[in-house]
Image (cartoon, rainbow, N blue to C red; front, side):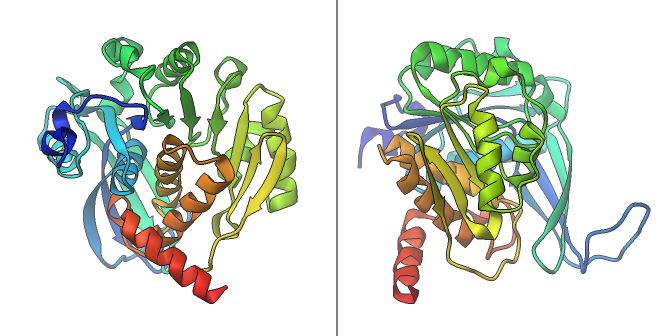
Length: 323
């Protein structure tokens, strides 16, 4: 066993390392027959609580898949925040830079999942909203030694912009998962290594309604015009569209029975970061990420649905036998 494995909280960053900067929430989930319409009250079924948040989900997904992960976040000074930190430590994630807000509570997400596995989510950001650029003073010197920095949009945009500037200055690859969907300034996108919107997020960024591979190409071209170097648009059950080195590649995925799609995008991004940190090209990395995401939708829960590396290998063997 290596020193890093024996003492996960004291590991030193190496070029295969991944820094995930983002949100940590507690997910409160209800299973229901269908998602409620505006003004509708419905009776649900099973209720359960899980650790979650897009940043947390992606950090755990990357760690389970073999990534050397450091997670940067802010939680409340409460039981939910302490439980989350202990969970990250149990996942062998470096929690040295998880901060505590003395006033705001830890973030909470209320999630309804229907019988088809589709979901509706409302987030109370709590301490996530106070993760500001000044909080990253001790993290910035580490960015140059990381292989990948992975960021989402459940923390303040000014913080995301600060991280992007630091990665560009250090020459480190930054993956921006632009979720939840929102408009983004050109100053953030220009020079960005990789952006990974889903269909709705790509539409928000470009005004193009993404309904398949052809419209995804149109949206990707518009994103590229804003200075992003590489684009991967995730297409749900239709896989993903990759633009890498001037070439579009559609990466399909083996059909599975979806139970809960809550964390599919987060597992995809965590897996993508691992593959890129290991030196895989974007098409190969996307194939790996699609397989990991496909496994996640067959399970209930967000963070809990993230597969291990061995599970992805087994899934590949099954896929090859089917094909």
